[in-house]
Image 1 (cartoon, one colour):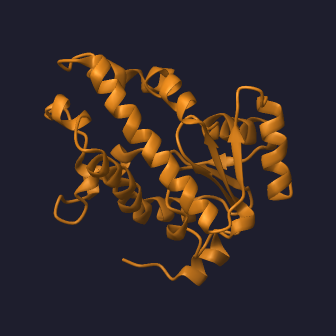
Image 2 (cartoon, rainbow, N blue to C red; image 1 turned 90 degrees about the vertical axis):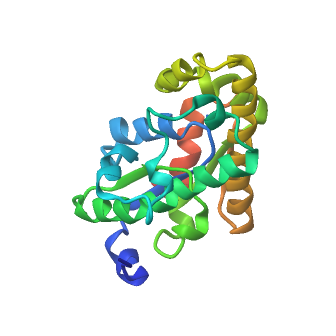
Length: 213
């Protein structure tokens, strides 16, 4: 099913998009928008959509699953892993957009989801999108040790060489983050780097300013 982009643009005028890579502050900013400005948000939970998919049509959405060989999964070639990270978001968007359309249109929505900008620019304009990013070093320091990634780390600790698996995994998420940022820059989307000296409040102020809020 394809929904007309012009229709989506009209129906989703209340949607603001935090794009970008890992550990850039997207989740923290989303919480600020919800708690301080009363925004709605929509969780990008793959498990909500997987039961409605078939492997032939939505191969990326079938992974990961409990029966995987986790050593092979985390240590796949970098390009193959990053391609899956991008593909799973693209497959999910068909369902995600429908969920967005079901939300009340009189309350603004903040979305926290890293995706290639060309997939959403037809209906979410540049002025309602910002790309948040951070350094490779920050991603490597934080990604697998975040509280919300505890389940991932638990699985990695079952692999033959957890330290090597984390190193390889970091290379994958760094490339994923860099690819999205580069695509956003190419599309003329505003970017904002989260550094160790940038406070949450200052990052929030800059994002709000960009959105005209």
